[in-house]
Length: 373
Ligand code: FAD
Image (cartoon, rainbow, N blue to C red; front, side, top):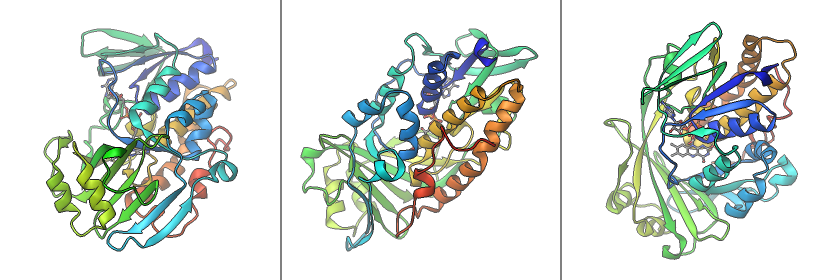
């Protein structure tokens, strides 16, 4: 019955693009509103883990992701100073073990592949949502350019600073966590020595650095390096210097120094956090991804959880029968809540794959088949 309805998706990041493409594939009427004028490839890296790959396969984008991304042989955890291997978790058997491969990829390339899976003309750019007003028979979205549109239902996928979430009476701002992350992409040809592994996490006492190739041809290398930061002004990231980086990681293994010395345009990103909303929906609006449950990046699962959300929301709609919208979104939220809370907690601990452990509970999950609440 929901196939007759109109859905407005606010925000076209990884979660918004995934839910738009999935709903369209199953015949739903979708329009997307995105504040960006256009997308410029953001210079960061991202992991696509098997649990995300199972959903992405439905969109037919798996070959493009494989053609672009890098399949690391293993996730290698090393001691910050000696380089001693703390855990060497093989990733090339992921397909057999968890029915999906594990890729690292340039985030901009990943996003472009997702956007290409959405029907052309669906995404309306330069539409920054100001307010959403719920009425008995629909929702009116008001944009900062003075325009407005109506839809039967709204999916809020507008990220950690979600305007839609504010509409749902959650006015609390995200809190700075006291942590920040240096990030840089490096042409691999500039590296002073070949990386020890395709994907390594270097574990220090109060800081860590993860580095990996972003492309299958191994031409692009990337690192994200987490450090404590007492305060942060505003919420934007800033340019950093190589000297700051070298100071922050003084004493780290020579292989780390080689990576830092090769970085030309490092940036420093504040890490913000906020608890998941208590209520994932209100009347005709439902949330997914960071709008609903932002998390620390230490498990590389923030975008992946948005992708899982999209699949579960689709299934709740597909399985609706004569259920009301309220029943559909209640079922979606109930199905997702426990898993999200567990991942949020474990991500904040920053111990993922540091020592031998079984990550199967994350990677084996299939959002397209897992039982619905
Ligand atoms: P977003 O990606 O933030 O997208 C929100 C979209 O909404 C944007 O396009 C934005 O322009 C738009 N928007 C915002 N406000 C409005 C408005 N008012 N009107 C209209 N549009 C609006 N996750 C992983 O899965 N793997 C990783 O390896 C990983 N690494 C990370 C490393 C770091 C250092 C950080 C900080 C995060 C990392 N994450 C990772 C987390 C991941 O980036 C987020 O969880 C993910 O981007 C959330 O996707 P989203 O679609 O919910 O939100």
